[in-house]
Length: 466
Ligand code: NDP
Figure (cartoon, rainbow, N blue to C red):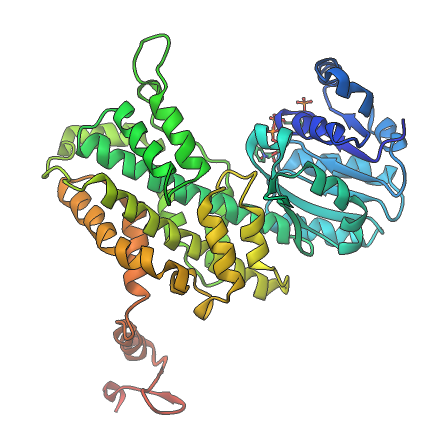
C-alpha cells in the first residue's frame, strides 16, 4: 500500500490518531522510536491494520508515503520533536510537509517554519485537543501553516476531526504559529474553567459541608442547563466515583497537587508580552502552583488554622449563575488575547471559526461556545465578549451572584482566586474613569514621564514641576 500520510510517534495520542486516520479510509504509514510499540499497535488494530503501513525506520516511513509527502509528528513535546524533525528533513524532498501535532510553543513553530521554508519544506503547527479519546474518535484540530500545504491534507484532517452538527471541528486558522497559539490559549482557558469548577467544588465541600456525591449531583444539574460542558459532565463523573480499595469517594484519595505541562504558563507569558493580562488564567496557573506546595500549605494550616469564618450560604442556583458569569469573563479574556496575537503577528484569525471548532472534540467543548461563536459572528462591541448583547443577561444576573461567591469565600477564609480575578476584571471593565490618573501623576512626579491632559492635546506635566 502507498500511504496518503505518515505518522511518527505512536504514544497515547499518536496511536489513537493513526487508528482514527486508518478508520476514515486513509492508508497511513506509522513509525515509532521503540519499534516494539509499532507491532503492538498493529496487533491491536484489528481490521484497521490493512490501512496501517508499519515502518521500522524513518527511511521506510518516508518511502511508504505518496509524494508530495505529509508526515505528522506526535512525539513528546520539545527536544524529541526537534530531534525527529532533524532526522526527517534530510530524507524529504522539496514540497513535502512536516506537521507537529503536539503541544508546542508557537514561537518554536514560527522559527521551525521559517527554517524549513528556506529548504523548500512546509511546516504545519497543528494543535490537537480532546485527549486520547478525542484523538481516536474525533478531536478539535487547530491548524497553522501555509494554505498550500494544508489543502492537500485537508480532507484527511477534516475526516478525522469531531463534527458539530455536521461541521468539522478543524480549520486552518492562519500561517505558521497560529494553530499552536490557538491551542495554547485553548489550554489556558481550560485551566481557568477547571479552576472555577474546583473553586465551586471547594465552596460547596469545605464551605457548606456537602459530600462529593451531593456535589456531583449539582454538577449534573448544571450540566443539564446553561452550564452544559464536557468539563461539568466529567466533574459529575469524577465526584461520583468511589475508590474500590477504600470505599471512599475517589476524589479523596487523590493527592491535591495539580500538574501542569506548560501551556497555561505559555498563555500568560504571551499575554504579558502582548500587553494583555488574562487574569483568570493567571489565577488558575497560580492556584496550580500553590497546590504543588503541599508542605507549605500544611505548615500554614498548623500555624494559622484553616478556614474559620461564617459558612457560605449561597444557594446552588446562585453559585451556578456566578460560575457562568465567571466563565464568560474568562473566555472573553482568552478571545481578547487571540485578537491581540492575531493583530501582532498578522495572522488574521477568524475568531468565530475558533469558537466553532471548539464546540466539539476538545476539552472545553460546551454549549457556551456555540453562543460565543454566534456572538462573534454578530460583531463584538470593542472586541469584548462580555459586551455582546447575548451575554448581557447572564452577566447582569450573574454579577451579583459572583460578588456573593467572592465575598462569602473571603469571609469564610476560602480561596477563590479564579472567581475573584473574574470579578475584578468585570469591575475594572465598567469604570468609565479609573484610578490610573493617579498612577500617571506619580509617574510624572518621580520620572517627568508626562501625561495626557483631559480635553487637551500633547504631553503635559503636573504643577509639581512648576
Ligand atoms: P506519550 O508519552 O504517550 O508518547 C510519547 C511519544 O514520544 C512516544 O511515541 C515516544 O516514543 C516518543 N518519543 C519520546 N522521546 C522521543 C525522541 N527523543 N525521539 C523520538 N520519539 C520520542 O505522549 P502523548 O501521546 O500523550 O503526547 C504527545 C504530544 O501530544 C505532546 O506534545 C502532548 O503535549 C500532546 N497532547 C497530549 C494530549 C493527551 O491527552 N495526552 C492531548 C493533547 C496534546 P517511545 O515509544 O520510543 O518512547
